[in-house]
Amino acid sequence: MKKKNKIIIVDDEKSVRESIKMILKDYYDLSVFTKGDEILKEFKEDMADVALLDIKMPGISGIELLKKLKTIDEDIEIIMITGYGTLDSATEAMRNGASAYVNKPFSKNKLLEIIEEKIKKRGKNREKKKKLLDLENVKKSLEKKTKDFYYSTVDSLLAAINAKDGYTSIHSEQVARYASLILEECSSFVKLIPEEKNIFHYLVSLHDIGKIGIPERILSKDGKLDAKEWKIIQKHPDIGCSIVSPILNPMSILKNYMCIIQDHHEKYDGTGYPKGKKGNEIPLFACIISIADVYHAMRSDRPYRKALSKKETLKNLKEGRGTHFHPEILDIALKVLENCGD
Ligand SMILES: [Fe+2]
Image (cartoon, rainbow, N blue to C red; front, side):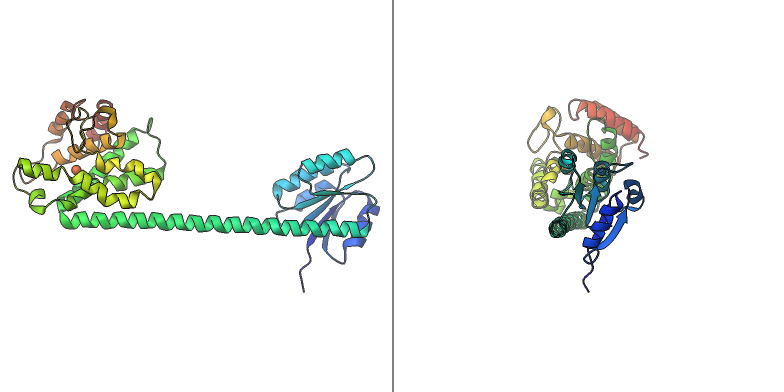
């Protein structure tokens, strides 16, 4: 048996309540109240499809009640019952979200016709909302899948660096850690949400991904690089971009992070590589990574030299203020690195 639609009736006049009940009782599941306060105690979303409210009632008025019911269930269809002299109020009720009004005395057929029309309208509205919600859920699930795919691709690339060159892998992880600490200290002028900070950390760990394309004999050469080898090494930012751009470009927000790979060897005075950008041409993310990168490189044992002490490393960084490094970012970074524990 089909479930009956639910109707709420609120009217202080017994004769009106009774006549509405007589008309509707065979067709609908009715809840009857004599005043607004009574229904407000128990009203909740989905309690009814349609509410019939008297406009003039002692205590809370029909219009006030209409507003309160709509705040609890915005889809409920509300029909105002109007008597002589309350037409202005009926118009006001319509402005406040009522869907119709019926004048007293009303005919049985007219009342049933209006109620049926409003029940259908509510059904359609709810169906539309459900479809929108379903679409929203599909969108969220697709976004999650894209993000999961992105992170697993980054993980695969990190594994590829590790397989190629153990030092670059450890170096990348450490640079990402230092760079994230420095970024955190830049929070007064770089506002990032946690998700963006995560992306930054992940992409910094890929800053040397282009070294996959550099011959191993150059990467692990036990001595200084000659000019030709140095030229080859300088290609790694461009190689890195060509590896990563198919992942980053479809996610438009990530394009801003491409500089992490492209510009991490640019220098403030324009003597860096690959493009020789200078000053404010170098994006802030790249300025941060450049410092973290050099710090970790100096603090590591390399085939051609021993690791520098922390004191020497910080001294060398300071000497690059305004030449190699962005001066203000370096000032922030030095405080972070002095206290970073390694
Ligand atoms: Fe690099």
